[in-house]
Length: 87
Image (cartoon, rainbow, N blue to C red; front, side):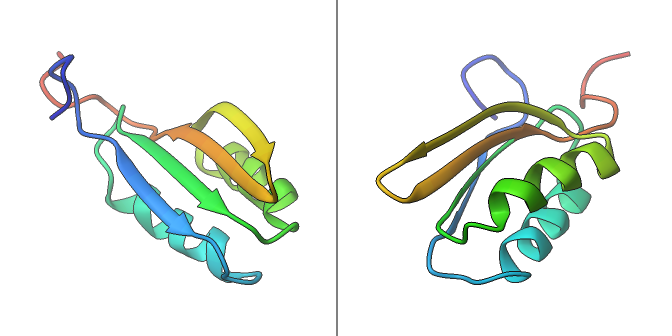
């Protein structure tokens, strides 16, 4: 759990992996994550700039942030579904 009492963040360091591996690892993490879990994805594959936002739309995950610095793309996603502990 994080400091707000919600699900803990998941960090996926996928730097150096080529398409389609970054999106496949991200899809797997989203499928396993509880609703509301933040997933931070770091990757260097240029295709991820298209693939990760498309995956978010396809799965219902919320793309909170997308940044690029020094060749590293960073995405902050929120897993879809009910948040654990909420009713």
